[in-house]
Image (cartoon, rainbow, N blue to C red):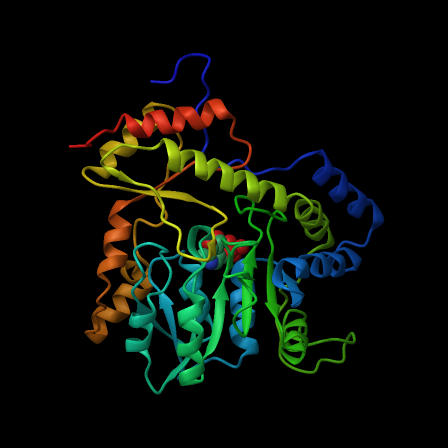
Length: 372
Ligand SMILES: Cc1ncc(COP(=O)(O)O)c(C=O)c1O
């Protein structure tokens, strides 16, 4: 039970501080609110997080994925290999461009695509692999990139949860043909709503810029068919403020995770492993709970510790995927995905946690004991 002077600890605490508010008001007063100088400056600033790659800002992480797949020419007749253990947006983007989703299983430690499962899923129709850097842990890019090269497949990184994560010194979003980020309020940094596509290919960057703005570089001189996925300058101004803070916030997340790693000792709980060479940015601090997960979560809530399951239903079991698969008699063999969906629980790890709150989180988890 929480005592009267102990507030419940929320699972996430998005920051909209005075600086963000001032930046938004400044842009609103300027009258230049849509894809203007703030967006250009945000793109340039974000480039530092992805080894200087070209950055193209859009209105959400989902748009970033959608646009990147369109720009790569992926569409009907193509297959894209995607983990089922992710947010639905990863697979939705593939279906939105008319391509087929092929699910591959994950590694139990990193929660990213299992390279052996990816290799087994490649067919003559495979056009791309979409590694998701789930929870802020980089997927096994060192093993996935050679598979993509061998089969001549594009790599579309879903880095929506992993700003500034890295593997062997290379930041996520700087491995594949393109990377995508989300700036939704609960992400490690945000722009109210927003997204970014990153790529080393200048031609691809130009195509992305055209596609996000009705196919226009010059007004009314439309070159290709495009959408409106522009970011507002208000969003970009908020994003620029957050960009100055994300480095410090990430270090705080990592320190909070190190505290929880060191203090969580309940035998029914496994703390999140980190792969060799991986820089985990702890968008989520996700434990595995053996025994009765629902009961464990209820106890954590009762102790005032926010908790949530990302994701209780793997994508292949969601209606828009499950029903067509049932009709076609198609099944997926995804044991690690199913096991993760049944066992994971994410705990608060956000940078504004106090030491007292961290201690309360660890105590509440340890009180689960054997969880029998
Ligand atoms: C793994 C993953 N992919 C894609 C997205 C989509 O991002 P957005 O919500 O900005 O559209 C999210 C964010 O919610 C995500 O977590």
